[in-house]
Structure formats: C-alpha cells, structure tokens
Length: 439
Image (cartoon, rainbow, N blue to C red):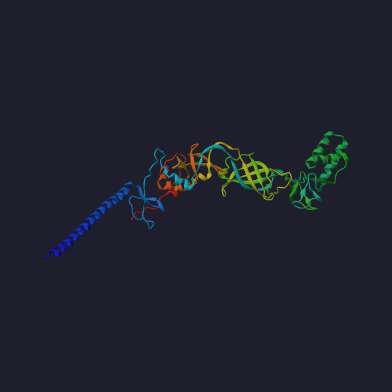
C-alpha cells in the first residue's frame, strides 16, 4: 500500500473515532441531565404529597380524600389542599383562614365595627281603619208607641249633635207627663220629685222635663235627638212603625276618633306597650301623617298568621279618616340603650345559625356564631357572640365563608358558647357531600 492511500485511511479513521466519541459524550451528558431532572420532579411530587392536608373536588369542597386521584363526582383530578403559611408575627383565632391582602382588596371586602349605641325599636305594619267602638251609641224607646215622625231614614246618613232623629207617640209617656203636671199643681214636693224621676226613667232628658214644667203642657210626641256628631250605622224602624221598649231606633257612630286595627309579627310584639306612639298613613290622603297611640294589645296570638293584634286610637277631628280605609302603621317603641350593633348585611343566616366573619387583621378571618336580636334600618342587634370594637366583614363575606368552609373552620364551632347552638341539628349548608373513594 502506498503512503498517500495509507495517510488518507488513517485520517478517515481518526475523524470517525472522534465523531463517535463526541456522540457518546453527548449521549452520556443528555442521559445524566435527564436523570438529574427526574429526581427533583419525583421529589417535588413526594414533597407535595407529604405537605398536603387533603385532596378535594372544588365542586364538593366538604368531601376530603387522603390521596390524589380522579374525582368520583366530576371528570377532573382532585386538588391538593396545602396548609396555610401564616404571615410573620401575625396572630389569628382558631379556625381562621388566611387570604392574601391583595386578594382581599380585589374582592372588595368591606369591614364594619361592632359598636354599642341606641337601637330604635320600630315596627312597620299595616292595618284597617275602623269605628271607635267606645263612641257607638244606641237609641231605644222605653215605652210602647208609634213612630209618627222619622227625620233620618237611611243607613250612612250623617247626623249632627242635637239633630232631631225621630218623634214617637207613646200613651204611657203622655200619661206620665200628665201625672207630673198634677204633682206640680198639688204642691207636694215628694210627689213632684217622684213624678220627675219617673219621666227620667222613661228616657226623657232633663231639658225635656224642664220644658214640660215650664210650659205646664204635656207633649204628645217625645222627640229623640242625636247625642253627638256621627253617622247612622243601623236603622231599626220606619215611618209609622210600632215600637216596643226593646226596639232599637238608631245606632250612631261618632267619627271624631277612629281605631286602626293592626297586626305585628310575633317576634316583634314583645316590646309593644299600651301608650306607645304610632304614626299612620293612608293611600287616600298621600303625604299626610296621623299621630296616635296604642290603645290596647289583644291577649291572644293568631295561630294562623303568628301575629298579635292591637288597636291604635287616632284623632279624626276633620272626619277624613273613614272606616275601611287601608293604613300603613309605624309603631315607635322606647329605644334600647347601649346595644351592640352591626350592619344587617354582615350576618350570614343559614337557617339554623347566624354567623359573621370576624377580621383578626388584614389577612386573617374566622367565623363566629352570634345571637341576633331586633333588626331595623340596616342594623342588627347582637345579643351574644361579639365584643365591642371587633371588625366584621360586611361585604364579600360569602367568599371568605366559602374558604372557611373548605378549611373545616366551621367544625370548630360545634362546641361554641352556650345558647348559640343548643337544640339544633347539623346545618344542611355545612354538611359534607356523600362519601366516596377517589379513583
């Protein structure tokens, strides 16, 4: 073999060897890096599994699983629930949740302080205007006779005080007047006094008796007059009708004052007292307000509507309030002093519990059971469960409530203060989903 061919073959073999060596080195480095990368990946998965509190399906957050996998409820993987990392130096109550302050700001969370103050006790309800039954009068005859003149002949007709209503002829009344005149002529004071009393028992007024005494003439007809302004509620006779001692001539109602019969809910009836101020309005007279007061609170509660009936006396001097009118009733009770109050919107009502979200600081929140009293004008009375000065979430609390539910914070409320959850079963809003094993 000549030298040029040998040199060429040697050079070619050297180049091939170098190339193979490079490929081997490159393959070795690639395989080594892949092995190095797989170790941290497996380590991260193991670390996640080690640190996770549990796994859950976001659609069923109350159901927890002890290992990852596919959700038995939805076609998705379970999500790991990691423990909270508390902010340095921050303290929070048991069962609290931590939310990044930036998230709190983005959610528009608004806080309000639990503050003591004066709580107005007010009830707004409805009622109906009715006749004041204390001002109804019946006019009857006390001797047999006949109605010879009927001045008012229709139900609903208005009458004025002193107006002639009817004139009745009664032989017994005529005879009693004649006896009175005989007694006057005799000069016997005892007989005069007895005759005068007899006329009074027949229903004659003192003015009518004095008229007979002055004129010395018996009146064939006895007139009956209206005792007050009002209207005819009931008419018992007609012109020329015969009457007996128990016959009702008229039933009159005086409308100078009226009743407003109203009903209040059972939960708001405890503090209502006789004499409490009341303001009423009627649609027939828009813009006008009539002042009155509670006249009577009925002793029995309506089992059908769970309401307590009461009546309000309202002065009606101009007679513009008429029986049967619909009325809006505004009851004003004595205010309660030094009552702890929070915005009503801050209370989460689950049906069996009342819960508020208390802010421990800017990023830590925890749920608290409260007893709620009266509510009015966007404020709720807190009887138990909060201290003055505590901050509660008034807006966005449902999102924090959901997060607290995920973390099992409500489980810590099972043994909360006495009176808050006594005699009540599990809250259906806080019950976990049906148990199932993850695939």
